[in-house]
View 1 (cartoon, rainbow over the protein chains, first blue to last red):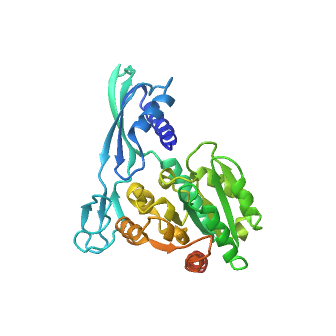
View 2 (view 1 turned 45 degrees about the horizontal axis):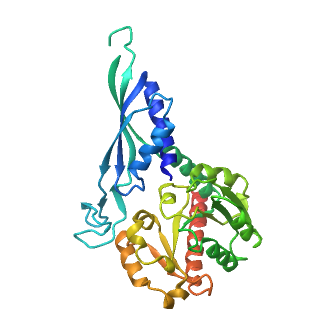
View 3 (view 1 turned 120 degrees about the vertical axis):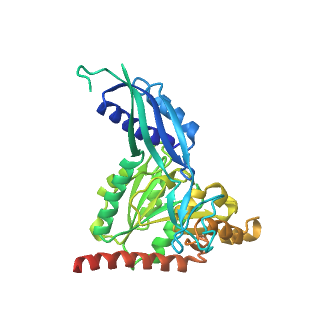
Length: 121
Length: 229
Protein backbone atom coordinates (compact mmCIF):
# COMPACT_ATOMS: atom_id res chain seq x y z
CA UNK A 1 0.00 0.00 0.00
CA UNK A 2 2.86 2.42 0.73
CA UNK A 3 3.99 1.72 -2.84
CA UNK A 4 1.68 4.59 -3.81
CA UNK A 5 3.69 7.14 -1.80
CA UNK A 6 6.89 5.64 -3.18
CA UNK A 7 5.51 5.87 -6.73
CA UNK A 8 4.62 9.53 -6.13
CA UNK A 9 8.14 10.39 -4.97
CA UNK A 10 9.54 8.42 -7.88
CA UNK A 11 7.39 10.32 -10.38
CA UNK A 12 8.48 13.66 -8.89
CA UNK A 13 12.14 12.74 -9.25
CA UNK A 14 11.70 11.42 -12.79
CA UNK A 15 9.80 14.49 -14.00
CA UNK A 16 12.27 16.85 -12.35
CA UNK A 17 15.25 15.08 -13.95
CA UNK A 18 13.59 14.86 -17.37
CA UNK A 19 12.75 18.59 -17.32
CA UNK A 20 16.30 19.41 -16.29
CA UNK A 21 17.61 17.57 -19.34
CA UNK A 22 14.95 18.87 -21.75
CA UNK A 23 13.33 15.44 -22.16
CA UNK A 24 9.86 15.47 -23.64
CA UNK A 25 9.25 11.75 -23.35
CA UNK A 26 10.57 9.30 -20.75
CA UNK A 27 11.08 5.77 -22.07
CA UNK A 28 12.96 3.81 -19.43
CA UNK A 29 13.45 4.36 -15.69
CA UNK A 30 16.10 2.23 -13.97
CA UNK A 31 15.76 1.54 -10.26
CA UNK A 32 17.78 -0.26 -7.65
CA UNK A 33 15.67 -1.91 -4.97
CA UNK A 34 17.29 -3.67 -2.02
CA UNK A 35 16.16 -7.16 -1.09
CA UNK A 36 15.27 -5.91 2.36
CA UNK A 37 13.24 -2.94 1.14
CA UNK A 38 9.58 -3.55 1.90
CA UNK A 39 8.51 -2.86 -1.68
CA UNK A 40 6.42 -5.10 -3.89
CA UNK A 41 7.60 -4.43 -7.46
CA UNK A 42 4.27 -5.26 -9.12
CA UNK A 43 2.44 -2.94 -6.81
CA UNK A 44 4.97 -0.16 -7.43
CA UNK A 45 4.63 -0.60 -11.22
CA UNK A 46 0.85 -0.53 -10.99
CA UNK A 47 0.80 2.64 -8.87
CA UNK A 48 3.31 4.34 -11.14
CA UNK A 49 1.30 3.52 -14.23
CA UNK A 50 -1.79 4.98 -12.60
CA UNK A 51 -0.28 8.28 -11.49
CA UNK A 52 1.99 8.93 -14.47
CA UNK A 53 -0.89 9.21 -16.92
CA UNK A 54 -0.82 12.52 -18.81
CA UNK A 55 2.80 13.18 -17.82
CA UNK A 56 6.01 12.86 -19.82
CA UNK A 57 6.62 9.57 -18.00
CA UNK A 58 3.38 7.94 -19.14
CA UNK A 59 4.08 4.50 -20.57
CA UNK A 60 7.71 4.45 -19.38
CA UNK A 61 9.22 1.03 -18.69
CA UNK A 62 10.54 0.58 -15.18
CA UNK A 63 13.52 -1.74 -14.88
CA UNK A 64 14.28 -2.93 -11.38
CA UNK A 65 17.68 -4.22 -10.37
CA UNK A 66 17.58 -6.10 -7.09
CA UNK A 67 20.41 -5.32 -4.69
CA UNK A 68 21.49 -8.09 -2.32
CA UNK A 69 21.71 -7.54 1.43
CA UNK A 70 25.36 -6.98 2.35
CA UNK A 71 26.52 -6.35 5.91
CA UNK A 72 29.84 -5.50 7.53
CA UNK A 73 31.05 -7.13 10.74
CA UNK A 74 32.08 -4.52 13.29
CA UNK A 75 34.69 -6.90 14.74
CA UNK A 76 36.55 -8.36 11.76
CA UNK A 77 35.30 -5.88 9.11
CA UNK A 78 34.26 -8.78 6.90
CA UNK A 79 31.77 -7.87 4.18
CA UNK A 80 29.32 -10.68 3.60
CA UNK A 81 26.08 -11.32 1.84
CA UNK A 82 23.21 -11.88 4.26
CA UNK A 83 21.22 -14.96 3.37
CA UNK A 84 17.89 -16.03 4.85
CA UNK A 85 17.94 -12.91 7.02
CA UNK A 86 20.71 -14.18 9.29
CA UNK A 87 22.49 -11.01 10.40
CA UNK A 88 25.38 -12.81 12.07
CA UNK A 89 29.02 -12.69 10.97
CA UNK A 90 29.94 -16.07 9.48
CA UNK A 91 33.49 -15.74 10.89
CA UNK A 92 33.02 -14.34 14.42
CA UNK A 93 29.38 -15.37 14.94
CA UNK A 94 28.58 -11.93 16.43
CA UNK A 95 25.38 -10.06 15.56
CA UNK A 96 25.92 -7.53 12.82
CA UNK A 97 24.03 -4.24 12.55
CA UNK A 98 25.83 -2.32 9.83
CA UNK A 99 24.11 -2.73 6.49
CA UNK A 100 26.16 -1.83 3.44
CA UNK A 101 23.31 -2.46 1.02
CA UNK A 102 19.90 -4.06 0.91
CA UNK A 103 17.57 -1.23 1.85
CA UNK A 104 18.24 0.63 -1.40
CA UNK A 105 15.42 2.41 -3.13
CA UNK A 106 17.05 4.60 -5.76
CA UNK A 107 16.52 5.97 -9.23
CA UNK A 108 19.72 5.16 -11.13
CA UNK A 109 18.97 6.60 -14.57
CA UNK A 110 16.26 7.98 -16.81
CA UNK A 111 16.20 7.38 -20.54
CA UNK A 112 14.08 9.20 -23.10
CA UNK A 113 13.86 11.66 -25.95
CA UNK A 114 14.65 15.32 -26.12
CA UNK A 115 14.18 17.83 -28.91
CA UNK A 116 17.37 18.35 -30.93
CA UNK A 117 18.82 21.69 -29.92
CA UNK A 118 19.78 24.19 -32.65
CA UNK A 119 23.50 24.32 -31.94
CA UNK A 120 25.31 21.01 -32.19
CA UNK A 121 26.93 19.97 -28.93
CA UNK B 1 14.42 13.78 -31.61
CA UNK B 2 17.48 12.64 -29.76
CA UNK B 3 17.51 9.61 -27.48
CA UNK B 4 19.43 10.20 -24.26
CA UNK B 5 20.08 8.45 -20.98
CA UNK B 6 20.87 10.54 -17.92
CA UNK B 7 22.38 9.14 -14.73
CA UNK B 8 20.36 10.17 -11.68
CA UNK B 9 21.29 8.18 -8.55
CA UNK B 10 18.73 9.64 -6.16
CA UNK B 11 17.10 7.97 -3.21
CA UNK B 12 13.36 7.81 -3.79
CA UNK B 13 12.65 8.41 -0.11
CA UNK B 14 15.02 11.38 0.10
CA UNK B 15 12.23 13.91 0.70
CA UNK B 16 11.02 11.91 3.70
CA UNK B 17 14.54 11.38 4.98
CA UNK B 18 15.33 15.10 4.86
CA UNK B 19 12.21 15.90 6.87
CA UNK B 20 13.00 13.08 9.32
CA UNK B 21 16.47 14.52 9.87
CA UNK B 22 14.97 17.94 10.55
CA UNK B 23 12.46 16.44 13.02
CA UNK B 24 15.28 14.58 14.76
CA UNK B 25 17.31 17.80 15.14
CA UNK B 26 14.30 19.58 16.57
CA UNK B 27 13.58 16.81 19.12
CA UNK B 28 17.27 16.60 20.03
CA UNK B 29 17.47 20.36 20.65
CA UNK B 30 14.43 20.18 22.89
CA UNK B 31 15.91 17.20 24.76
CA UNK B 32 12.94 14.96 23.95
CA UNK B 33 13.32 11.20 23.64
CA UNK B 34 11.18 10.00 20.72
CA UNK B 35 9.88 6.49 20.05
CA UNK B 36 8.23 5.22 16.88
CA UNK B 37 5.90 2.50 18.17
CA UNK B 38 4.87 -0.09 15.60
CA UNK B 39 2.94 -3.35 15.52
CA UNK B 40 0.11 -5.09 13.73
CA UNK B 41 -3.46 -4.00 14.59
CA UNK B 42 -4.55 -5.22 18.00
CA UNK B 43 -1.10 -6.16 19.32
CA UNK B 44 -1.50 -3.65 22.14
CA UNK B 45 0.09 -0.35 21.14
CA UNK B 46 -2.49 1.82 22.86
CA UNK B 47 -2.61 -0.49 25.89
CA UNK B 48 1.18 -0.33 26.25
CA UNK B 49 0.92 3.45 26.00
CA UNK B 50 -1.72 3.64 28.72
CA UNK B 51 0.35 1.45 31.06
CA UNK B 52 3.49 3.42 30.25
CA UNK B 53 1.79 6.75 30.96
CA UNK B 54 0.54 5.43 34.31
CA UNK B 55 3.95 3.96 35.12
CA UNK B 56 5.84 7.18 34.41
CA UNK B 57 3.30 9.62 35.87
CA UNK B 58 5.07 12.24 37.96
CA UNK B 59 8.49 11.16 36.67
CA UNK B 60 8.55 12.10 32.98
CA UNK B 61 6.43 14.49 30.96
CA UNK B 62 4.95 12.57 28.06
CA UNK B 63 3.03 13.27 24.88
CA UNK B 64 1.61 11.00 22.22
CA UNK B 65 1.05 11.33 18.50
CA UNK B 66 -1.61 8.84 17.44
CA UNK B 67 -1.62 7.58 13.88
CA UNK B 68 -4.74 5.85 12.66
CA UNK B 69 -6.44 5.33 9.37
CA UNK B 70 -9.73 6.65 10.79
CA UNK B 71 -11.26 7.92 14.07
CA UNK B 72 -9.84 9.71 17.09
CA UNK B 73 -10.71 6.85 19.45
CA UNK B 74 -7.10 6.20 20.51
CA UNK B 75 -6.22 9.86 21.09
CA UNK B 76 -9.30 10.14 23.30
CA UNK B 77 -8.20 7.07 25.27
CA UNK B 78 -4.84 8.76 25.84
CA UNK B 79 -6.25 12.20 26.65
CA UNK B 80 -8.25 10.77 29.54
CA UNK B 81 -4.82 10.17 31.11
CA UNK B 82 -4.32 13.93 31.15
CA UNK B 83 -1.42 14.17 28.73
CA UNK B 84 -0.99 15.88 25.36
CA UNK B 85 -2.22 13.74 22.47
CA UNK B 86 -2.47 14.65 18.79
CA UNK B 87 -4.39 12.49 16.36
CA UNK B 88 -3.25 12.01 12.77
CA UNK B 89 -5.78 10.37 10.46
CA UNK B 90 -4.04 9.00 7.41
CA UNK B 91 -7.38 8.55 5.58
CA UNK B 92 -6.46 5.17 4.16
CA UNK B 93 -2.67 5.61 4.24
CA UNK B 94 -0.93 2.61 5.77
CA UNK B 95 1.91 4.43 7.57
CA UNK B 96 2.99 7.74 9.05
CA UNK B 97 5.66 9.82 7.32
CA UNK B 98 8.04 12.51 8.53
CA UNK B 99 5.94 15.32 7.10
CA UNK B 100 2.89 14.29 9.17
CA UNK B 101 5.07 14.26 12.29
CA UNK B 102 6.45 17.70 11.55
CA UNK B 103 2.92 19.09 11.30
CA UNK B 104 1.64 17.21 14.37
CA UNK B 105 4.62 18.37 16.43
CA UNK B 106 3.53 21.99 15.80
CA UNK B 107 0.58 21.50 18.11
CA UNK B 108 2.65 20.05 20.96
CA UNK B 109 4.34 22.04 23.67
CA UNK B 110 7.83 20.69 22.99
CA UNK B 111 9.48 22.85 25.65
CA UNK B 112 7.67 20.99 28.42
CA UNK B 113 8.21 17.45 27.31
CA UNK B 114 10.61 14.59 28.08
CA UNK B 115 9.21 11.70 26.04
CA UNK B 116 7.20 11.65 22.83
CA UNK B 117 5.71 8.38 21.68
CA UNK B 118 4.47 8.16 18.11
CA UNK B 119 1.94 5.37 17.70
CA UNK B 120 2.17 4.31 14.09
CA UNK B 121 -0.62 2.82 12.00
CA UNK B 122 -1.18 -0.87 12.81
CA UNK B 123 0.83 -2.66 10.12
CA UNK B 124 4.03 -4.74 10.21
CA UNK B 125 5.24 -3.78 6.74
CA UNK B 126 4.96 -0.19 5.55
CA UNK B 127 5.79 1.81 8.69
CA UNK B 128 9.25 0.21 8.82
CA UNK B 129 10.25 1.92 5.60
CA UNK B 130 9.62 5.52 6.77
CA UNK B 131 11.97 7.29 9.18
CA UNK B 132 10.02 9.80 11.29
CA UNK B 133 12.95 11.35 13.12
CA UNK B 134 12.66 9.05 16.16
CA UNK B 135 15.52 7.89 18.38
CA UNK B 136 14.27 4.31 18.58
CA UNK B 137 11.90 2.09 16.70
CA UNK B 138 10.01 -0.06 19.19
CA UNK B 139 7.80 -2.87 17.97
CA UNK B 140 5.23 -4.98 19.75
CA UNK B 141 4.48 -8.58 18.86
CA UNK B 142 1.64 -10.17 20.77
CA UNK B 143 1.95 -13.89 21.36
CA UNK B 144 -1.46 -14.52 19.75
CA UNK B 145 0.07 -13.47 16.41
CA UNK B 146 2.37 -16.50 16.42
CA UNK B 147 6.11 -17.11 16.62
CA UNK B 148 6.55 -17.14 12.82
CA UNK B 149 6.25 -13.36 12.45
CA UNK B 150 10.00 -12.58 12.45
CA UNK B 151 10.31 -14.79 9.37
CA UNK B 152 7.48 -13.01 7.58
CA UNK B 153 8.26 -9.39 8.43
CA UNK B 154 12.07 -9.30 8.65
CA UNK B 155 12.58 -5.58 8.01
CA UNK B 156 10.55 -4.44 11.00
CA UNK B 157 12.36 -6.85 13.34
CA UNK B 158 15.72 -5.92 11.84
CA UNK B 159 15.23 -2.19 12.38
CA UNK B 160 13.55 -2.12 15.79
CA UNK B 161 15.91 -1.61 18.70
CA UNK B 162 13.27 -2.96 21.07
CA UNK B 163 10.82 -5.83 20.80
CA UNK B 164 8.01 -5.91 23.33
CA UNK B 165 6.37 -9.34 23.44
CA UNK B 166 2.87 -8.65 24.73
CA UNK B 167 0.00 -10.75 26.10
CA UNK B 168 2.33 -13.29 27.74
CA UNK B 169 -0.49 -14.05 30.21
CA UNK B 170 -2.18 -15.90 27.32
CA UNK B 171 0.77 -18.25 26.67
CA UNK B 172 -0.78 -21.24 28.49
CA UNK B 173 -3.71 -21.19 26.07
CA UNK B 174 -1.98 -20.89 22.71
CA UNK B 175 0.70 -22.52 20.57
CA UNK B 176 3.32 -19.80 20.59
CA UNK B 177 6.84 -20.36 21.87
CA UNK B 178 8.59 -17.23 23.14
CA UNK B 179 11.96 -18.99 22.83
CA UNK B 180 11.28 -19.46 19.13
CA UNK B 181 10.51 -15.74 18.76
CA UNK B 182 13.76 -14.92 20.59
CA UNK B 183 15.76 -17.32 18.44
CA UNK B 184 14.33 -15.97 15.20
CA UNK B 185 14.76 -12.31 16.08
CA UNK B 186 18.31 -12.89 17.34
CA UNK B 187 19.31 -13.85 13.81
CA UNK B 188 17.77 -10.68 12.41
CA UNK B 189 18.90 -8.31 15.11
CA UNK B 190 21.24 -9.63 17.77
CA UNK B 191 21.36 -6.30 19.62
CA UNK B 192 17.61 -6.00 20.10
CA UNK B 193 16.29 -5.49 23.64
CA UNK B 194 13.41 -7.85 24.32
CA UNK B 195 10.77 -7.34 27.02
CA UNK B 196 8.11 -9.92 27.77
CA UNK B 197 5.04 -8.17 29.16
CA UNK B 198 1.34 -8.38 29.66
CA UNK B 199 -0.32 -4.99 29.51
CA UNK B 200 -3.38 -6.62 31.02
CA UNK B 201 -1.76 -8.08 34.13
CA UNK B 202 1.11 -5.61 34.29
CA UNK B 203 3.77 -8.32 34.40
CA UNK B 204 7.14 -7.33 32.91
CA UNK B 205 6.29 -3.63 32.70
CA UNK B 206 9.03 -2.60 35.13
CA UNK B 207 11.98 -3.51 32.93
CA UNK B 208 10.36 -1.77 29.94
CA UNK B 209 9.82 1.41 31.99
CA UNK B 210 13.41 1.26 33.28
CA UNK B 211 14.73 1.04 29.73
CA UNK B 212 12.59 4.00 28.68
CA UNK B 213 13.76 6.14 31.60
CA UNK B 214 17.38 5.31 30.90
CA UNK B 215 17.06 6.26 27.23
CA UNK B 216 15.22 9.51 28.05
CA UNK B 217 17.99 10.40 30.49
CA UNK B 218 20.60 9.75 27.81
CA UNK B 219 18.95 12.28 25.49
CA UNK B 220 18.92 14.87 28.30
CA UNK B 221 22.60 14.16 29.05
CA UNK B 222 23.54 14.60 25.41
CA UNK B 223 21.74 17.94 25.38
CA UNK B 224 23.45 19.26 28.51
CA UNK B 225 26.86 18.10 27.25
CA UNK B 226 26.29 20.04 24.06
CA UNK B 227 25.22 23.05 26.11
CA UNK B 228 28.49 22.94 28.07
CA UNK B 229 30.66 22.49 24.98
